[in-house]
Length: 226
Image 1 (tube, one colour):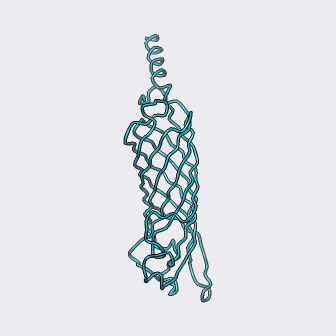
Image 2 (cartoon, helix red, strand yellow):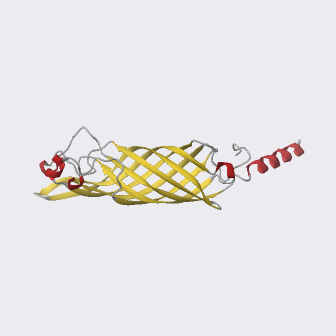
Image 3 (tube, helix red, strand yellow):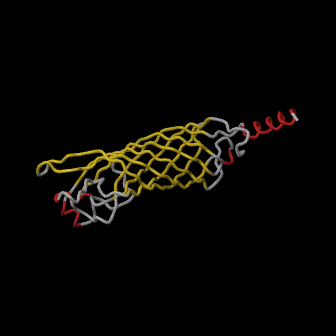
């Protein structure tokens, strides 16, 4: 019995020793907002975003991930193709600090240790909490009191990843965030000067960029073999 256990353990280690299941790296790219101010184009990066990412590859088709992202967002009615917005002339600047967890679903098997499976497109599904700045009140005409606020978003996206060199991989992805708020652009229905746009349309923000990750770690014997 002892010999069988040793043999089984050896077989498991042999099968899985070439599969690395952890990835850690950095992200950089562009960000943009879609709402009641400025451009209505969904993918139009006009600010810089950056962050860190960790992934755990459960098997060659599914990876769980967590990200922290910091991004500047801004827009200007002057950049819109909407004539009414051009005439209105509002602009804003804000920042987003986001923590997201979710899952990547690979279209093809992915394992950078196997030359046959070193690249794949993927779908991304996440839940996110983000912190940003809002205007709470107006102390005098044109002078506002600001505060930080945390809310939630439903993110989803698409990407493409491939082996770069040795244990490094690179991915290109676009991530959309639908929020449940309409005040990222400082919209405030209690302040006449800031009561603009469609109150029934919530804000979006987008991340478009590239991530560079280092892969490491070996799965335990009971993990799904690659």
